[in-house]
Each structure stands twice: as structure tokens, then as C-alpha cells.
Image 1 (tube, rainbow over the protein chains, first blue to last red):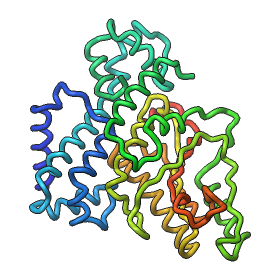
Image 2 (image 1 turned 90 degrees about the vertical axis):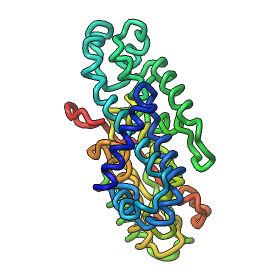
Image 3 (image 1 turned 45 degrees about the vertical axis):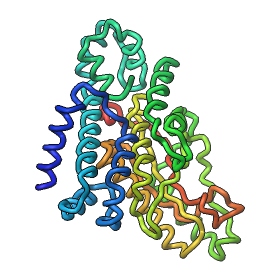
Length: 139
Length: 200
């Protein structure tokens, strides 16, 4: 729970400081950031615990007082970016529905053609839809 | 099916995202995406269970020394696929932090609209060093670990992924069965998600 609070605080900080208007990072960049900032601590405290399923976070939580500030900070930034990008990807169908009906009628979101159409129409697409496409990492 | 524009746009986005890429990934982010796309109707259908059965049959029919055995041919060349090197701890399924970026890059490709509607099989492979049964078990654990990370850290929908350990049976370089190049994670694009389930 302590880690969660800390992380939430970190998310809020990251949100107010930089992430509000900034682009989300790719999942690859998020992974690289975690490795860079938390890799040494993971090797030291939790080398027998795997990344997935919350196991690693649970282990690091146990060692929180010894985990570096850089790791705590960048973990919050990376997970917030992953969540933001994920939410944006999920939201495109809804946020862009009016733009889709107006500019790209009949296209379905499944094969990338709809996104291609919306990207071509960027100048006349609504600000909310454009922002969702940006946050989704699709631009 | 995808328009050139979106391919170009996504390629550009992924190339930019790859700015911090290091030599640890043999594949670029772009190669991961292009390697996994383009499944056609002519491609064979395959399930995780069929792959496991093929491995069991191959092991039963090919006992004996590892260096003299033939490698199992999956005959899946027509499926879109990639081979990636993921670093695991020695004799363990723990993913090294140095490979977190690669796992994220695979997730980027799976979240790309071009691959939205598709399902994948993630396979684990070892070289022939060590006991055969142990290698089979370890490769399954490693494939499971990759899928688990993709699902729980990078939000890939679990209904799109299966994990299969192929052990030491499917060598990338059958002429050099002990070469570390054979240790790899291979991912196949195997079909479309059921229509209407809207899986990402």
C-alpha cells in the first residue's frame, strides 16, 4: 500500500510537471526506462522475481526504503505513461466517432485504414480526437 | 490491406521511438511490426496444443544423442513471425532488465492498429545444452514469462496470446545445435481474434 501511495503521488507529480501535454512514451521506451532506473535495484533486491503479474513490484515494495529515488520516480513515470497510452488507444473509437462519421464514413477501426484516414484529415479532425491519436502513439 | 500512409506514419513513429535502442535487440521495432504482419488466408492454421503435440511426438520418435538428432521442422514458414533474443537469468525464466525494452517493443507492435485484430503464439526455445526434458520445461516457463509481462505490464489482451515451450526441438541453426543463437523467443501471428470481442 505504501508503494501504491508513493506511486500515485509520483503519478500526480509527473502529471502536473511534464506529462499533461507531453507525448506518451512508447512501451519500448517505458521498458528501457524501467531497466535503466530500476535495473540495478532489481538485481540487488529482487533478482529472483519476474517482471509480470505484479511479483516484481511486490518484491520492490518490501525493499522500498532501500530502492533508489530514481527508480521510484521513473517507475511512476513509466507506468503512468503506459496507462495513459493504453487509455488513449481504447478511447479512439469513441472520441473520434463523430470525426469518423464525418470524414471517414464506413471505415472500421480494425485494420489501420481508419487511422490512416484520420491522420490524413488531421487539419480538420477535432482537437480531442487528434490528442487521443497522439497519446495513443499512433502519429 | 493497410494504406501506405499509415504504414509510413507508424514506421516513422516507431523509428523515433527507437531512439534509445541498443545493440541488445537484433530486430528493430520496425522489423518486429513488419515481421508480424501480413497473415494471409493461404497460411496454415496452428494452435498451441497442436504445437505441443508436435513436440511430444518428435521427442518420442527421436530419442538419442542431441547432436545426432534431426531438428523438428514446424512447416510454419508461411506465418508472419519474428525471432527475438530475450535475456533470461541462467537456467531460469526470470527476464533480465536488459530485455524489458524488447518486451515493450513487442507490445508496441501488438498495440499497433495494423495488428489489432490478431492473435499470436509466443514460443520459447533452448539450445541442446542440458537435459532435454528440463529444456522443454524451461522453455515453457520462459514463454509464459514473456506472455505474462506482455499482458500484465504492457496491457496486451491475454485472449490474443498463447505460450508454448518448444524445448530444444526446433533449432534455428540445426548444424550448430549448441550455439546460443538457438536460444530465442519466436512469435507467430496465427489468426484473427473472434469478431466482436474488440481485443487490443
